[in-house]
Image (cartoon, rainbow, N blue to C red; front, side):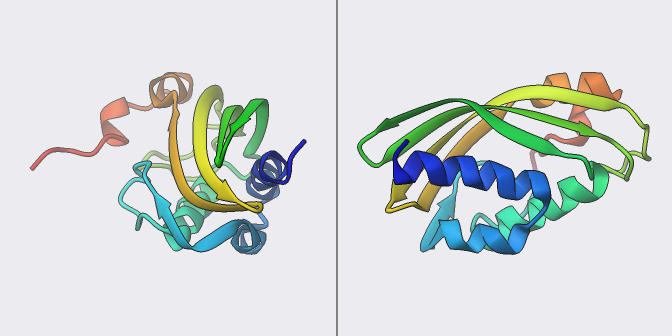
Length: 142
């Protein structure tokens, strides 16, 4: 495993354990987030804020890479995420229901540090499993 793919694996571990201060070690100062984070800033702090919200709603949140591919300065990952809603999420009271979804991340890396991230996960399946109306998670135009 290269330093970059190892770093991506470690970031999933950081998110799974909730050690968000450790996230900074894997992120370059010029980091840009390209995935919508429910209105959070599109930078390192926004990613951390997003995961604080997720972990407060899903304290058992776990993420793991199931596939990693590296080409040049890009690492592509297919991941699986799991959590149980024991806190409020998107205005929905705790349900005690769990979700398991997959997603993809593409990260531009240099020497184990992320410079850019693009990602997508199956938010519709997550909502269905939690009994949440997907419109509550999607940005509204206008």
